[in-house]
Image 1 (cartoon, rainbow, N blue to C red):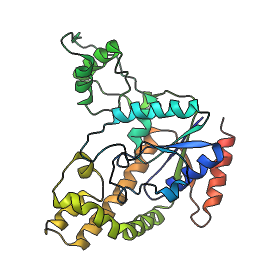
Image 2 (cartoon, one colour):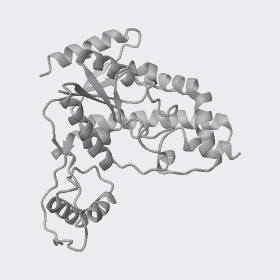
Image 3 (tube, one colour):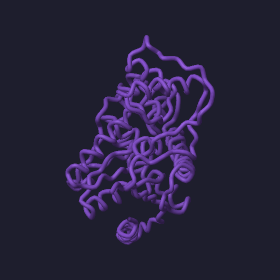
Image 4 (tube, rainbow, N blue to C red):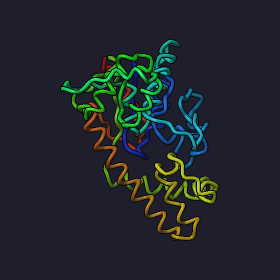
Length: 291
């Protein structure tokens, strides 16, 4: 069994995943693209040691902020972790809000057939083929050692093919998708409150990067980092940055809902924030009866 816990930011995914890990003897695999990076802890709401409750967590803080890390890298890393966890007789639990990461780990991608001019690419190594495929920045499933597959895939990409969203095929047949949700206004209030609570620590976290004007892909992608650069450079007031971050976080939550609803068959659960244990029980009961 593989459990996926997904949903928008600030909805309680971390707590739910830890509780499910305790119930099902599981280990957690991070599926948040920003939590991959070391030093980006506050702004990404990375689980603290206390929140982890001694449950093993994987693919957290494995890359420096200056490193590039793609969905293809995650696909390979996540599948290795899934195999390792299962080999120990435990349950892999993917948790996060980055839908592409989750889908790349659990799904294969099928392309429509069409006419194209094939090229054998005899002058390219497998590594060079992969570099050209990665340049298309699509969440594609492939084996870096399968040259025939790499050549076929690159030919299709160069001919203008795109993956059809409705023809993705799951790699695993024992996955249960759990989505956490709540009323939009409640969610937005939680997003705003969490940002206010983390503000002082977040400023301390961003400051060294902003003062050195470090503009890596990680820092320029995540919400709550790039927005502070104009503040430290004297071009914006702190109040303006706060409003911008909260607005961006709310918009991101909307996009997360849209993505998950369109891309995967999620089993949604309304979170009872007054009695989170009830939500845990509801989810566990559903999982028990799922397979």
